[in-house]
Image (cartoon, rainbow, N blue to C red; front, side):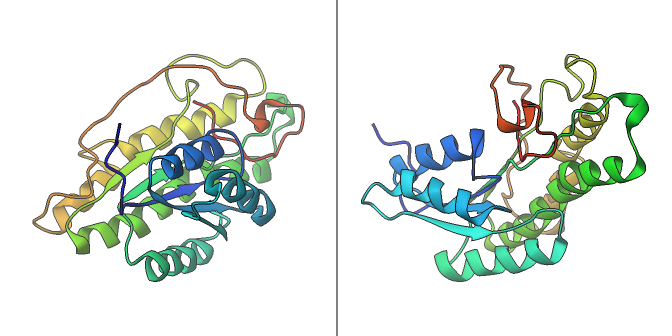
Length: 215
């Protein structure tokens, strides 16, 4: 069965582990060209090794979504390499499991920079390209804790950033407003879903600042 990803280019942030890695492998297995972005280049390259399996459809880029210059440079490189981007899976995220009383401003800023500002900057950079092309789809990853259920102690700041990140993804606000920049069909953000389920990504371990993208 074909899922229609032939000759489509998919960009996945946080592609070095967890949901990002699994998604990159699935897209490549369904004939998509996959740009695997991660701040850990070795992890992204390992994902590509799993995804390619002799078909060589995935390529790795080092990209820290906390850096706008990294985002712009990487998106430009992917567009040049693959002649365009059709799908963005905006998946990168971080967490720090710290008691609420022990949180410092730097901890807040680290999560906000990736889970909120980074999500928007990636979506904007790719979305403006899609506007120019007249087509494209953006999927922004949120989390159960982003306004759906509580995830327990030590996740209060994480859930706050993920909750606001959900608003960035809504079709008539946030990145969805890019549609009004031009008279066109994309980028498509007119389908908003609260899909629910648990996984066990690296950031839910005791190591506080490992990359993650819980669902």
